[in-house]
Length: 526
Image (tube, rainbow, N blue to C red; front, side):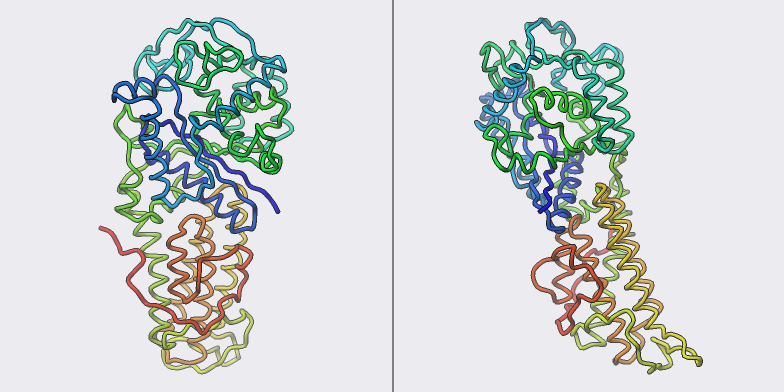
């Protein structure tokens, strides 16, 4: 069985979950759902990053211990992802005992292999970013993200000798051209490496809230070094579980572009130093901007995803996030844009198609869905004055025959393009392919006009084809919109939930099922 191990960043607990975090989660979740529906063994990991000076300070400000504070703040993320129907298999916290042992084991191996040394760090440190900054990164003397001056640090640290991995990293990128996607982000990582790599600090002495360094307990591991190891902890690296041997070669990290350097330079080098393979692929997405700015607590421009889900519905929010922000590009979020996308794509296209099909089946077929006809089935010629006109006097195809053939053809294309798009981690392209099928299904019905015809074999044929199109659409949209897919499945009389992508071939709707006419799935918004 093919494996698919997908991870998100572990989000820093001193922030509240915002729409930018939600985009990362929904993107990873759609990929995980697609691969499950394709029959792969999937392991989907997310979690929270809970160490560092910023967390310790926040806990003190609230009169709590660090553990009490992180217990509270971590729970916010778990709750938010549950409300967005995220299907992670594991939720890791860096304060867990399993993680402490894995971090200590991982860096002990790197030290035994000769890649860690002790030195003194002097430089600038942003507490908000929990990372060291070069002076070239500052804007008017301040951190560009947190708009405040970094602290001047001068302390004894242990360093990872990243500088020794310039050539191994470049050779790895040459061997694995798809290691970072999209190519623009790969080029950014390669450019950074070619610019020269300096050794990086991986421990701190000035704080105690972190994973203790096993060979020197005066130090704790630097929060970013600690956090990266979570991807190994969750699949049994320390214990050398069978899951680690099976899943690590198929890992895909889904990250935002702001942490590209950590995941595309530091992390593969650390893996090499520890004697394991670098990650198979890093999928780098852009930022979801608000009025052109990245969301952050310090800028007070965060948008709670659960608020939007309560307003528009979970699936509508998931659709907007995936459809409007291609992997690698920045998206600019606005309330007006989500309303526009909701009305155009969901209410006018998909919602209208579901309402139109179920209404005609109830009114013309007695509420019982006809079976999907083969696309080459000879069709009757009983034409009336209106709707479903017969072929011409020379025996040309009937309108209904054309409609069935068109629906089957467009469904086949949508299935092929949707699978290919998910295979290259492009859910926005997958949704474009599905919406082409939705538009074509609406167009075929408008041309055939079954609502104007008398009940009979031609109405049954076109409605059977329409129901089959809906069956396929429900399967194809399920990774992005699981709730809507399940509701379409229910309305066309099918039991359970949309099944495997292997069942998207034309002709699967069995007929003889009760079709339900109900309120619009997506009422128009003003």
